[in-house]
Length: 124
Image (cartoon, rainbow, N blue to C red; front, side, top):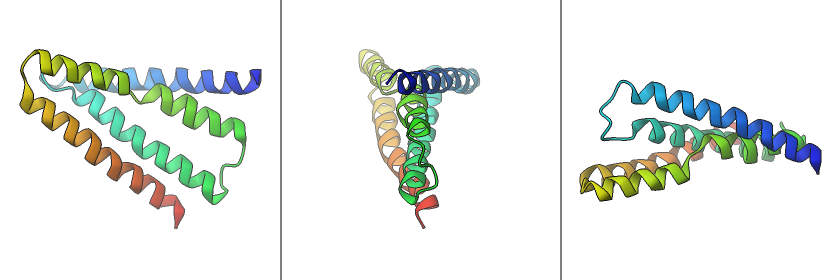
């Protein structure tokens, strides 16, 4: 159990640091009104988790510690649903319903497409 928790922790650390770096890098080039950094991270995270689960189902990644590292740890630390919800709340508080609709719509639609693409890429 302790070994599994360590793998999850290492994955969370890696995913969280990468999320921060990507989000900050992307957001530095854009208007602060639209949270594109978080959107990009969530879309990439959806692709990654689809890819990982596709590889697990295909039998390419059978190590249970690696599975915990990549899915629960890395993807859990990398994706940002709580940040996503907070940013939506801020858009509501700012009465910016256009960006709210755009952000939620793109996150859900493109995120699902990327999950499917990641899964399909390795499931063939």
